[in-house]
Amino acid sequence: NAGVMQNPRHLVRRRGQEARLRCSPMKGHSHVYWYRQLPEEGLKFMVYLQKENIIDESGMPKERFSAEFPKEGPSILRIQQVVRGDSAAYFCASSPGQENNEKLFFGSGTQLSVL
Amino acid sequence: EDQVTQSPEALRLQEGESSSLNCSYTVSGLRGLFWYRQDPGKGPEFLFTLYSAGEEKEKERLKATLTKKESFLHITAPKPEDSATYLCAVQEGNYQLIWGAGTKLIIKP
Image (cartoon, rainbow over all chains, first blue to last red; front, side):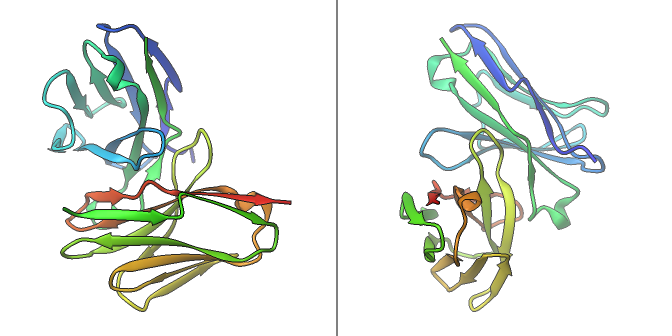
């Protein structure tokens, strides 16, 4: 039973390019969360999605950032026109449903570096 | 403003030397407090959920306790493989978690 899969593990982009981060939740999980982590800081909530629906995107900047979780395929976090301040580790977590969302299963993250 | 503060930021112990990590929080309505372990280059791994003051949970060398304002993660006779960053998070609403910055625990053999 594969866990939460994120790719790529490391992504290097130059300022102004686009970054696409992918997350495949655990089998049977229909809820996906994206978090951002900076060194020495706690995880910061970005967005919560269910299949084909964005439930809460209050933690995600309104410009340049978008997320989707299509009916088929992985969840995608997209950052357009990246800036150096976007450099961070981005983690995806999944849960089976809102009743059980207390226990999140995390992927190993994508480390985004913006040059 | 809701906050979660963990202390100390880092803790170095000798193998077998017991100690405690602290997580203090200020939220208006706690629905749950969570402890996770994070190894370098990995995502957090769930350890415990605590729901009400006085509750305790144990797993191997770890025991988590909860009061109305803080939680402790007690580690008894730790081993080098217990070295990791331990994260605390609180749930106030339906699903959003507020995370502390973590305590980096290093156990020396």
